[in-house]
Structure formats: C-alpha cells, structure tokens
Length: 312
Image 1 (cartoon, rainbow, N blue to C red):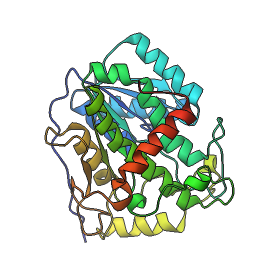
Image 2 (cartoon, helix red, strand yellow):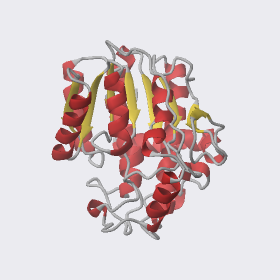
Image 3 (cartoon, helix red, strand yellow):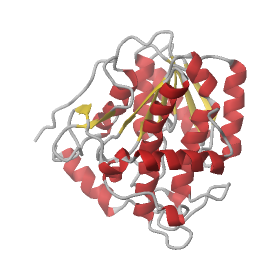
Image 4 (cartoon, rainbow, N blue to C red):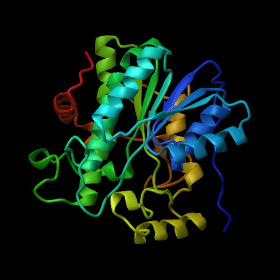
C-alpha cells in the first residue's frame, strides 16, 4: 500500500540564522536542509567532521549557494560546548532559530560522558541545557525560537532523582526515557523563565513519533554492533504505511514548532495519528511527565549546578 506523503510549508527565512544540533545525519540533516532551502543561514555543530562535511556537501548539492557552516561540537563534553559558545559569541551574529535535536539512545551498557554523567542524560539533556545557556545572548539578540526535541518515550516514566546518573542499576530504556523527559521539562521551563526574566526568546518542544531513523540502528560508538529488533520492525511498518512515520515525516513536527508563525511559546508538536507515532504534524497535549512544573524547576536548578552554567 503506497504511503501518503505529508509536508508543511515553511515561510521565507532569508536573513535568519539557525543552529541545528545532530545535523550530520538522520532527522537533523533533513531539518537543516529544509531550513537552508527556505533561505536560512544554518550552523551545523557536529562531533564527527567527516560525516559533517558529507552532510554539508549533500545540502549544497540540493541547494547551490547554500549558506551552511560546520562547527565542532561534542555535546557529551562541557568543555567542547563552552568552546563553541565562546566562538559564536565572539562572532556576535544573532541566532533566530535553535533546534536542540541531537541525541543518543539506549547504549546496551552504561556509559559516561567525559564529565562523568550518564551518557544519555549528559548528552541529550545537560548538553543542550549548557549549549542554550552559552548561546543565550545571541538568542536574545535574535528574539529566537528554541525548539527542543523530546521523544515518544517521554509519555511515561519520571526523573530518577534517587539515582540520576544510573550508577546503581542501569536500564538503557529507562535512562533514555528520563533524558527525554528532562529535555521536555527544560524546553517548557525555558519558556516560563524567558517570560519572567524578559530574555526575549520563545521556547517550545516537539517529538518525531516513531520512524526508522539511525537512533536504534547499529551504532558501534555506543556499543551497539547490529540493528535492534525494534528498528527492523519499524522499517517494515514504515514501508507499509502502518502506524509509524517515515524519516521524512518525522522531521516535520520540529520544523513546524521552529518555523510556523502559528506555533506557540510553550507549545508541543508531534505526529497526529492515534498513538502519536506517525501522521501529519500538529499540536499535542502535554504528556503527564511533562506537566510537572515542580520537577521542571527542580531539574533546572540541578542542571545549573551539574553543568556549572547559569542562565543569569
């Protein structure tokens, strides 16, 4: 059965500067290419320069004359994040769109960042928290919209306050779920704090649903030497147009959240089929774990303490 294709219109972004994390492949690459195609200047901070250069070449082939710039960034390293922040602030160019998209998912064994945090929490949440804090002056100057990419895994679960770094008992999926709940709580708390402090930025969150991306595929760098059973099943369902989305449709909620004039500050966007795993993008109701404002405030204070970075 042929799958129906979904898309959204993106307004002219000429004169806008966007930064997309995780843009060397997968959803991030497609998001960056769409922004470039709409006229934006796009900064792509990546960990793997070889993959990054290939991604830039692909975008430039699709969009001759594209203004796309590669930067070095390891979101699992606070020093690397700080170095990029210093460089971009020195350049002084306002940022109008920030899409916190990069992520790592379910290493089979517990791994740590260079700063000693559990890899998924340290990369998916703390890395983006620190990056956004470093870029705050540029985001304020650009009256930016910040879109943070959570996951359908965040529909349930909670922050494991008793063992935040999963040092006692590691469960890859529960740790991933925690990291993505944290991303969602951060994105919503950023909206509230910007309003209260007058930072001049808006912040919302999105999720891609379920699609055959590289997150669950073989990832030797996180200790997964072969594709998971889950991603093989997702590929079959996606090819048949059943339940889940495609890689092309999965990037649309974040693009809607980041670029639509109708997207709301503090809003939540994702696929709209029953179960929210696939379908065209639209407004979502906040899942239970993301409605916990007390946890969001607690997480914010803890994240400032762990990262050593304040949004003041």
